[in-house]
Image (cartoon, protein in one colour):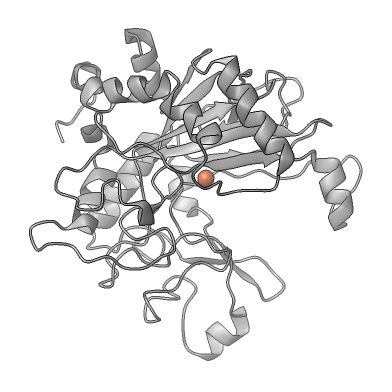
Length: 356
Ligand SMILES: [Fe+2]
């Protein structure tokens, strides 16, 4: 990354690296994905993982961030055309613009398996639901764990950088682009700090962050960002023809480009209003933690997991007394630039740097 790209990453929380993955690599991956477009978590396959490991991405992040366990897994993120998909599901009305909302990765997300009326009858609240349950529970969609630790100090998993490789033409808005709340990474970090200062837990269920939100029909949902946090994001509207979500910025890329985004940058795939699938592969990269005995351990699902302090399947791991993975993750959530060795010059030069 050159100086200008680093400044962009610092300011916006993401940066696009043009033509960083060769056509050989993208074509090989696409061939495989076309055979099985519904796969989400891909598993160990060089045709996918080489998009990171054999392209310029590994070295670029090695310089900007630092040493890191290389991915052995990835998320193949294909977004099918919205109209077809939604007509099949019966949720689409012609002309209706579907909503799109950004999230921060690592939280338990999806519909709550218990109805709101049952939660209320049990004397529990939407804010803290799950706080006295089984800490081993995984999210209903097979997603992230309800808690990262048995002590329930941390509800959100994290990593350092998301690297999303673009496999087809996404230069026209409305193609299902990866989209972000541009510049909101610092507000998210500030929210985590506020939660830590108030005694935690950090993430959903903690101060200012209700675990569940009621969305009518007696159904509560997890994984929706708290209103107070969203209200603290900077106002960076994006007005573009064919782009109906101005609070989001679409990342316009073409085959072989990649975007690097901080974990703390709220993001989402957007509904694909074109008639061609959107095709990306996402890698989740965490800076090496030298005292962590599970760096490189295959059970973690390095590259795909958004909760690498537990196994990909959610089992708890034993850690030596000398290393507290959850405390470490909270410290990094509250000081995200501390994981970017190659950004130190930029970060300390910038106005507002508090020397955390
Ligand atoms: Fe995500």
